[in-house]
Length: 423
Image 1: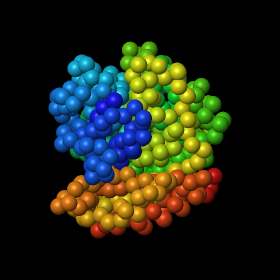
Image 2 (image 1 turned 60 degrees about the vertical axis):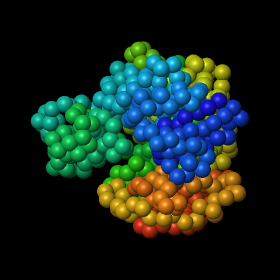
Image 3 (image 1 turned 90 degrees about the vertical axis):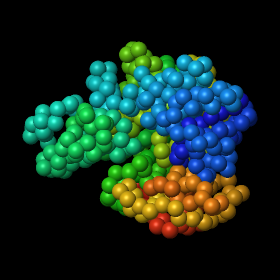
């Protein structure tokens, strides 16, 4: 079958790598892709929000399935456009993608269907939000309602910080129209865990757990980013936690979306906080996480196209997911200055070091080809991933592999997976 993957980052490179392994694959395309994806797929210069061009390309090139990976086209309804054109697409439609597209919607859903989460209030008036803060216990969490590239969350330690945060989100529009509404919620403490799942509208199958590192600098200092590295599985996601989540969170979320007339087909990403009162939902994403996909997919043994088909056709109950009994760690190589300002266009050297090494992956995020060379083209440049028999071995191998790559203004955190030592 011919497959088109929509997107251009490390997540899409990881998806393309998994699709490439399928015995069912004919031709693989990616729109728009990047320099790494171009080595395993034919990249086409179509943007992720150019819905009509994507649909036309799919028809002209006999595409059997379009995999919509990023949040923006999902929330804006690319799957609906493709389905209306008679094209099979993997990912939630617009009605279901609101699970990520509106934090206010997802919080209200959890409240209505008794899915454990932090206490909260929604606001579409800055004045009322500022007044409400006067009665809140600090620290407090502020969330822009809409999509904000994973950065629309502010943790405020003082009342003054919180008031300034409201002004940034709702008045200064730091995150654009995403801040027209906002959520103010209690600050939860505990271990964060990410759990990805496949859904077909009624059945849910859980992938292996992971843990992301969002802050730009070591020791979780610096600004929020799209993710500076991750590891899988999380040693804190125990069998006991899994049983509670299966009972109180996972299936209840799928059933809730179905009851709301928004059956979810695709990937639900559960951002969890393991609190003293049990696991609670921090957030939902309506797609593979980035960089979580880079440590979860390399460990998956199933043919990914079989699972994509099952999700689309409502036949996921016929499959069990299988994962390798090992671990993976991803360290993001970024441009120094990310996520604020940084230079691009530096040549990248060292890719040949990954050739023929089965346990090592170099997933491209922000790269492009210029004058015949692969150069940096974003804040997050590469995701260096390694597998090992356990997390400590995988971590050591991943950091070893970061030394194989060089480029101007290369930056990374040095403590990805440090929590492993505390498990």
